[in-house]
Length: 568
Image (cartoon, rainbow, N blue to C red; front, side, top):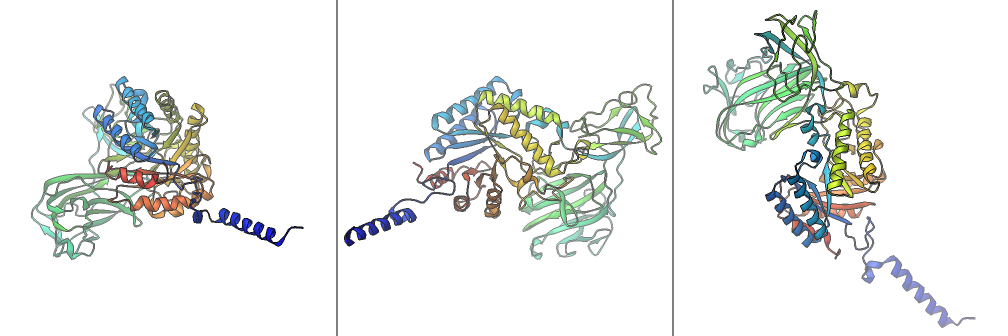
């Protein structure tokens, strides 16, 4: 029989052991992180190298960033530079520069993670074949004249688009112009004719607005173009100028003109291939204006007769007919072949053609839709085109021969057009399924190269709180449920700061590993600090990345110190 003293000692020992187990932080031991790291530090601590060219100078800049990253505890670099997804077209000098970057990464203990294969922005696939783009059915109004077939003159569908008719600064035909006589005025400084509209005194509007708008009836299956001329004088901020098409209160397409604060009359254009809208509200003006002046004149909107950006691939047939539909003409016999190029003014009428000079024609075809940006056109790819995957596979194989990567980040974000061509329409799949099938095929390409390659992907197109929903830009179809069709071993790289907790929780509950793309060109490290808290509270969170789209690397060292505390 044990003594009372012995029993008491055993009780004390058990109590101490229990305290040790349940309160490690009280004893100087850090609790295990959600991601499984005993020191609460993210396993993967990376930075994003974006927008560098395949040159000697930019290679040296990347190597300098690698040095900074390594010195401050980071262990990976996502290389969004060099055009990696077109590597089969590179010369030996470009390959040598990439190998040099890879060797420097290895020397400094930085894992090199390539990224590419963007269906949303096209990437190297568009450079290889513009016809890989998504397409929408439309018609083009043409006229045979002088042995050529060229666009027919556009009829302006805007009432008073020349802005010549106004009463007390209110312009006939327009739904509104901002606060007539206070912000908007009839002016004799005109690009053509006698009258334009002038905007100033923006602070008289609580939002700094200075706009003019007209709503126009449109038809599905038509391509429309809007144009106007701007003139600016000491305008601040000139970046607030915008041309926009809305339908049902939602932005269909828009563009911010690249103008100077003071600039003479300059034409701005915006084009839309309409899939299903019945009316469009055409806006031109400034949002958030502060000071200065600007003028608008020569506003035109109508059905565009343009032979550019007509894809030539499976699922995008074309047929040239007489305007009344009574006659059909044969490509290669009656007229020369239509090529898919960014600019095509006309095609030739061939000898012996049945097309008469002066004849009005209609081309039933498909056009490549786009989202306008200040830097140019965002063109998405058709994810139902089998030839696209052959191209991607060739790039993935060659890239692995040059740098044997173990991880790859799929740049499958913001896929703003899709689903309109016959390949998509006849697939029997929703856009969610088409997207899921695309990612599944991409994942299989990498697994065929090496079954151990970890595939990551930007999360937005699979996040119901982000872009995985219906009515997304010009997409024909619905992305809702896309996350159900993606392999579970794909890691979701979440990047929308404001919904990070909701997104991380959603993907974790769906069985995905997650990753946080932090920073996003802020002036301090508040964003990464908040991401760290959210990631550490998320099961199977793998890591965090310093993500800049503006080459702002001034806080890279501080970021490394922040996310690497306790890692050494």
